[in-house]
Picture 1: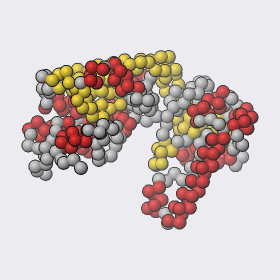
Picture 2: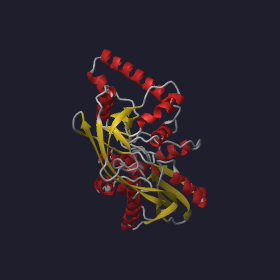
Picture 3: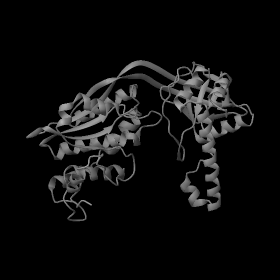
Picture 4: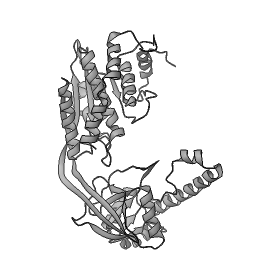
Length: 408
């Protein structure tokens, strides 16, 4: 995993104040930094950490058993390296656990559809549900929409725009003639504008729209939130109480939409397992290495620990989590006696509004007051190209000095 190694190399050089490059191999003659470099390049634990967290523990939605397992795993992993760690409860969250999702098109032909439930969706009865489909209509205004709502009872409501293409724009630019690409963009922009107008005329934002359909007796709510890449949708959460909320892949959503639009009366069968678990404790995981002469001052590494739950949560933000853990491991091994206390904060429920980190600030004013520097990583995959000062006007001077280069 060369990305992880490059990211860790960049991080430790920033953290330990590297000097200007003196050779093609190392940025400094400092033996501590050379040992850190060698460890990161030849004995990286990032692939193992990635497997354990992404593949075995899996996604980390706040309020789920998987999130609790992740917190316990992190504390145990730190302990195995001789680093003190703890889980700090900052609040509670609605507990929910995902089960199996299986979606089938039964008519006018049989096809198993690619899709899954949104987070916190209600499940179906054990034997599932079977129903037809209906498209969110074009109406004159919110009054007309309310008059239409009874039509959704007992049907799956389709609430997303059908995408005219599943190819990213970069593929069109490479393989299509310019005239075809330009024509597609005009058609897509027109379709998007009309769909947005359709949504606005309901008088409801998307969250409230799902609730209204739920209250009107929809059998389920089907969306498709494409991320503009091959085979990838963004799958978030729902607030429905009775109707299961689903996300279908771009291709399968388009199929169901066209069948509905053309009067082919598609029938869908859904089996979706889900459990609501009541209120569950919500935590931050904190790793700590006490400092020496300046132990009451703090340097902090941080990344949010939670994720959405339709995939492994690797890029948002499992990569940041294991990068900070690996940095703590290597620093423990080659920088055993730091002057300042080094903390690693793995925040819970950041996806729902920065809840974990804000709670830490509120619960630990003494740490915040003596915080000397905080390094946060949440940029997913790809090469690290820049560091941001987070809005602090005087930080540029320090970043430039730490990097051993002149401020520009």
